[in-house]
Image 1 (tube, rainbow, N blue to C red):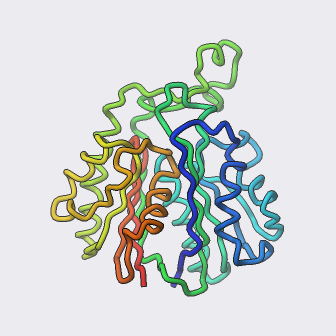
Image 2: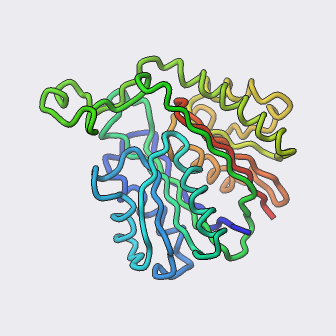
Length: 284
């Protein structure tokens, strides 16, 4: 079995102007406060707002945490960053070769969000072989790169390296061609979640969606069929924190008591449509 413990999150409905590793630092510290930093086998950071193009933000975070024995790397997985990193950590621990993996999904959006469309936030958790209250039962993840020109940061890669003219035109910021795509993707995610849950005969006690605002929340719920009355709603009108969104919402539901002992928890990540993911946990 693979377990998670020491969940921690920060959500700021504003620009913090912190680099990603600094924004993640306090949350990550809380997640490993009851374990020696030297016993952390890996640090995985899910982000699209990394400290540098190179090196990895995970390397910077591991250094700040004194995780001297850990390997570290970033995962760039769209709005499904948290669950994507969790899936990797799950595989490492399940293999039997590793025992303790720190996962942090963090977004510091001042460097790419010129329209104030997103929030800053981080969710951190320790994935471990040591028995804990929450076990990871199932994680599914799918990607779709067909909508490339609808939502992207145009400049900074090998297709379009940085130029003075590009900076002046704010091509290093997120470009959203059609904001309606968020509601469309939320609806598609609800259909996907319903299909995966039914296919695997899973009847969740509660469903935790990504953050994305009330319209996206309503679109997601409307597609869930018989599970539509099980969706956690406290943060339904909160802006998306991109790859950290589902982790923040999961952590919030744990903190406020919405998740109870004996619950089967389904967490769904979605946002623009490049990816969507569903994970199921047991709270014993």
